[in-house]
Image 1 (cartoon, helix red, strand yellow):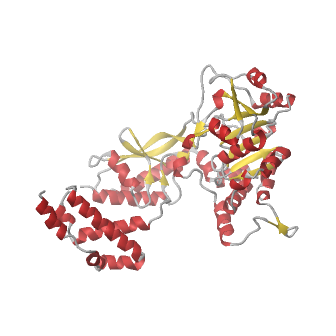
Image 2 (cartoon, one colour):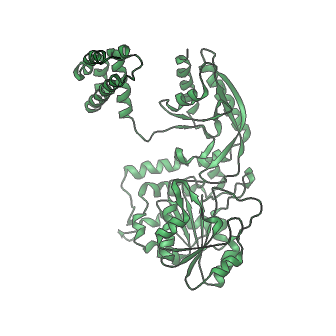
Image 3 (tube, helix red, strand yellow):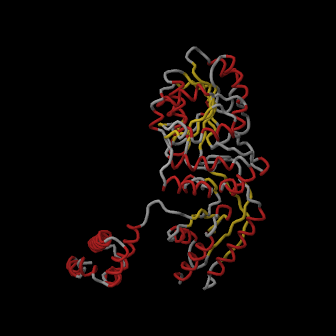
Length: 474
């Protein structure tokens, strides 16, 4: 395109006022702040000018039509007005999906969140004594009841819990850890880095695949503050491997008067072995085995809000509680309210399995999953007005996610969709960009939606998304 042609097209770009006074944008002013509408107009016009200068507009004549520009502005208004943190539909089959917000909260926790958010509360007020109290008492009693631990402390997340324990109990001294347990989890969170930042000194023992009790015993010195066991929740070593049990470490620690810390990570309160999932230790087992301190997350297999929980001996927890860092890592009223409401459900395990979404999805019967897949398949076929989609019910596999049980998949049912009129990656993009984004996965050139992680109301949204998608196909 010549310079003269570009200049002529530039002159045809309407001004801000011209677009602002169109009927559609006047309507937009009735539902959106004027500032957002004006900013959207400016952005669209600037992008149009840039497209002309760089000759990147597919059809300049069409793009300069008023109705076309107004359409772009309305899309931009909606984008600028929308929240960045949005609900999505998890059709991946990964129950505790780190990228999709991890555990869903039970209704009881949501109701408690609303109550704590809209009313004043006794977060740091002792109702018995009528004076200032501690926020840390609110979840401690139920944690002690459920686990048998002497004391408990809740902080903002498990990384914070591990950091606080190391800083409080081992600053300037050695912590002995198996080399095979120096894990890295999401966001490049590495045990050696956390230990270094906490002021503790790492003393790793054994080999990547095999560590023996005598490795720990040989490394104990006057500088040893803790023996530490880190549950390798996000990977497994198989074959020629061995590790020291928690019970063996506790026995060694007691002989040498050295506390034993176990970082469980996922923090399960339920034994999942009856459901075909093995190898995830429970919090109760760690406490019963004699661990002096146990740390774990509240928003993974526990199924509650994002918090870090520290359980253990009263004297050791007291040291953590007195650490000035505790204030920097402290948890707020919303998380405490949601955590307590979630924990109360564990007083009856059957109730917990029914009411805590994470547990309900993990233990959902295969027959129920197949029925859900049948319903989803029927909903998508009903939306296919042009009969251009191939929709099938298929057996597949789900994962727990969140770094738990990484080597184990469990059976599920999914719905697979493909079309001759559009590529499968195009299907994925269109569904991901739906008003309520739908997140599935591509497998064998088919778009798969695992029904295990679908929630009430999701099927209707998926049906409407496919109906809209089909109407846009040639």
